[in-house]
Length: 181
Image (cartoon, rainbow, N blue to C red; front, side, top):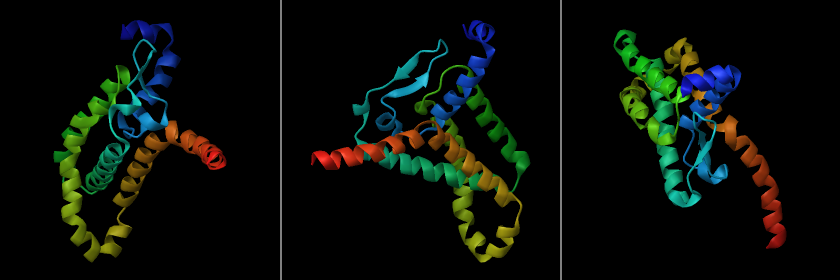
């Protein structure tokens, strides 16, 4: 089925891959922000879950935890002491993302990916005292640009597809709510 979709319209399939990758890494709050559209199936159908699946506060807690793990893992992976040992883990993560981009992506499918990144997160958290002692040296290290680029890419995946337009629309609903109150 996937091969048939690629053969029918390769450009559409490639453009949908971006949304699937973003869907894989988006926050749980997206169900409140997107009108329930979660991802796009291989046959170009929108797949959704109900907004009431989790309470809003529960989604907020999960998203804060997820964001902290991802940001610390990106920094930890950037400053990993052994690229030889880290490469298989990072390649497996990229393989998992590629499979999701080709087939279907949902934030529950990112759990194995996040699980493999936790050692990088732990490495960074354990290295915080060393980073603060040698802050000037760490600031001059070129790997800081790798970490910053990874964090910006992660942020772009989260905010570019849904939240920028949602926040723009919310600005107008606040005024409407104030008028009704």
